[in-house]
Length: 349
Image 1: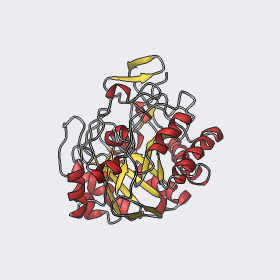
Image 2: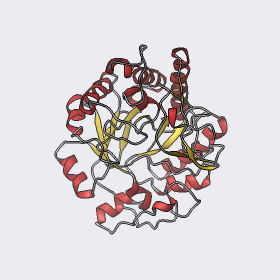
Image 3: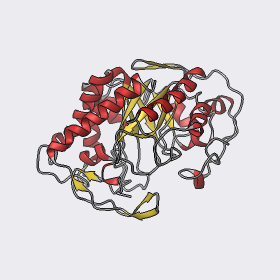
């Protein structure tokens, strides 16, 4: 496992052998970084040109590689990739430049979590970080910015959405803890343009229909989030479909509604990281979302932090993803893939 600096994540990680302690990562050499940037660009191009995705989302959140470079708790480098906020964001900028050059900025979104302390992350000035990355996203005219508005563990607080709204003028997507009513009010007030739901979509494949009908929501089964087969994955009941809410255009992609499916790691792809028929059923069931943003998908071998995420680096993986995107499109849905590198969250096992 590699990272900006040799600083270990507290706690344990899931592997094929079960939970094991996190290991100290190896600090990346400067000359290794361009190859990783290229992997992001290649994964993005293959996602659009081969696998048939409508867009890609750069995963710059939740304590994985890009986020590790951004925040001081994981980055103590003294070269051009560390120290000042400008230097710590250099890797982010290089990835954005490479990915937008590969597929066009109108097909590229990005996810940030400046407040989230997951994976032992923190920053001295999350509001300043929010402003900085929002301005970068605007500079490169990204199709959307997807913001986790809070911290899983409430270790860091702050009102970051107004900062992103002020400095990023394209589509702003918010996520984390929204109810239907709060989402409606936030969109109506112009605070955000769309809201992404994670566990809500996990347990309710037809979430927009349920919102439209004020129907009762299925409760998610946390025991099946990351392990198992169809149980807790494709067996949640659905209601009849209907037309929903106001459309929105995000970059090059027209969406039928503003209720988006947030990326949630489900680890059903196996240790070869090949999307399968179970995933085909899962994503097709949720095609009524304005936009499906898939679980984090690997840009290269040896970048996995969960063990059974899908990949984007072999022909077999891309062909398997194409079956899924074709099926989602056949039901009138739109789907973006989240591209990522686990960084120091990767375990050798």
